[in-house]
Structure formats: structure tokens, C-alpha cells
Length: 88
Image 1 (tube, rainbow, N blue to C red):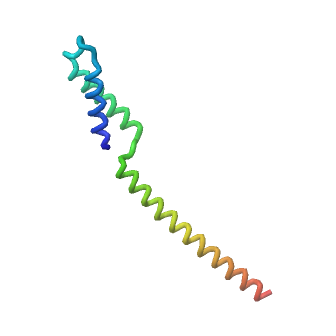
Image 2 (image 1 turned 45 degrees about the horizontal axis):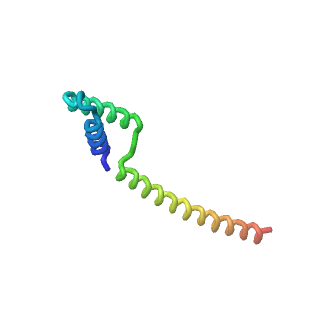
Image 3 (image 1 turned 90 degrees about the vertical axis):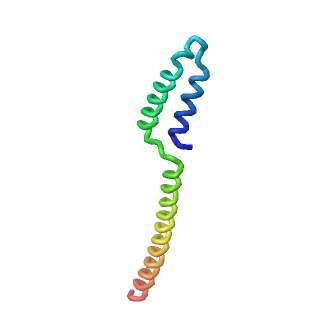
């Protein structure tokens, strides 16, 4: 869910919970709460689900490349050990 949708929903729920004597200023209070929520969420540097999924995909690709390089290193080390044993 997008951050803006969360902010709007929380603002609306806040407005619905207001006591009857504050209903006249409901819109203004909702807007102020939304501004505060947007500011707080922006400072948290949250990711959207799409951004998280992209980062997760990049990490998976990087991990597989590292594993492939580790295998290559093992093969090269084995070859080096074999050559060293031959020349000794």
C-alpha cells in the first residue's frame, strides 16, 4: 500500500474518532495530522514494496554472482595446488 494511502486512511480514521464537539474542525485536524504523518514517514526513509522487491532481486543476483565466483576460486585453488605438487 502506498504511503499516501496510509496517510489518508489514518487521517480519516482520526477524524472519525473525534468527539462530537470537535467535528466542526475535523477537516483542519485531519489535514494537520496528514502533514505530520507525511513528515514523520519521510524522515524514516521507508521503502515502497516495489522498491523493496527491486532491492531484493538485486541482492539475489549479487548473491548468485558471489557464489559463482567462490566456486571459480575453489577450482583455481585446486588447480594451483595440483601444479605446485607437480613441480615439487
